[in-house]
Image (cartoon, each protein chain N blue to C red):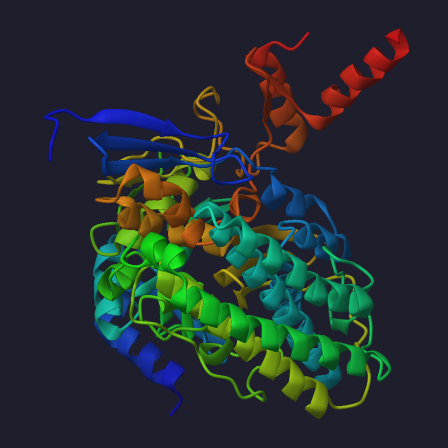
Length: 393
Length: 160
């Protein structure tokens, strides 16, 4: 049914569905979306420019802070790029540890997303249960790295911490628990009418569109395209660890749920295999501070999909240019396609369906636009104001 | 013969004198440097060869121009970086969104950050930079050092 005219509905930057600011302008006809225009940039922190000002060692920690969820994916991608430039390779044990941490991160990221998806469709009981169980994997990550968010495991030439034999039984125990719970959730999700009504045939992305629009990760695999950087362009120890690429032909939000559940189970098996077959030996090789001129392209399968970093060095201790493209940006054109023809009420779950991470995507600009007085503040002047205020008090 | 070498041979045959250099620094990585006018033709035939996925477009500010690098992937596996150079004053390059629709945001990103005009792009409005960002200031160009950008922002918004 058409009302003869379209209405523009702004969505965001303070977003009803997401915890991060992003703006979407929807053109609607009655209740149906006819067009959508994304406007990103609210989270830009100028990280690419900041890379050029810091040394290669400092940049490991900068890369870690691109994202609070897939921090390990960014450092892995970064150190690989620099290792490629230096012509060094991480020792075998370090490569296995990188896989273990990356897969633990995938489990935590996907569990987090499943909880958010449950919340978006109003199923908060499931959200609470999922996030309670997610603590199991967070505890393992803390046990291994000492941190819950920024693991700081990677360094150029290897890893910074070992996984000692005493922690392995604890890790295996938690993995068994997570496997049992994930299988249970899959059963619930497949049979629960609330979930099925809100997700089946919602936000459809046809395989040909997914490829045309260069979608990545679980979003692409849920459209039946078998594509995974871990298999196609293996890094770390992925060429030595057997795993299946989880795909689904449903092309809708429900398929995206199934793919991520399937990937959690695959990751659990991969970690078990990696712990079993982990070679002994050193953790890192020493590398020089100065990097000879050159360039490298590094790719990683982050929880949300293909992550690509490009680095150009100039023979100094700092990079000439560093480029980051996170998976969320790659999925935005596909997201816009999914939204067209859908109901306004389904916007939150479709948006959440690609597992967007705007902190990852926005990383270039310097302006923090503050209050509606339209002031632009950089960090230093902001600090000045804070100081002044304290003095007055 | 490695897959990479076969691809390189095919690129050489197709582009002939329009190609400046091609190299394979390591397994699954190819860097090709082409002339500006060969962009659309190259993207078209690379897409037919199977390079359907555009990972991203990188801009690099060089001394004698702006380098654009199109990172294309073959079946997710081989990453080909197609490089070309445009002039710094009024840089123009044809859009590839008609061949690879997924390029739409990457071209806008480079437009915001380096001021490269992608001719024929459906919408080059700011994607990342704020609406009030001064015109002709492209933050990732080398001549805009951080300090200079900060001063610009101060002037523009008149902070007390």
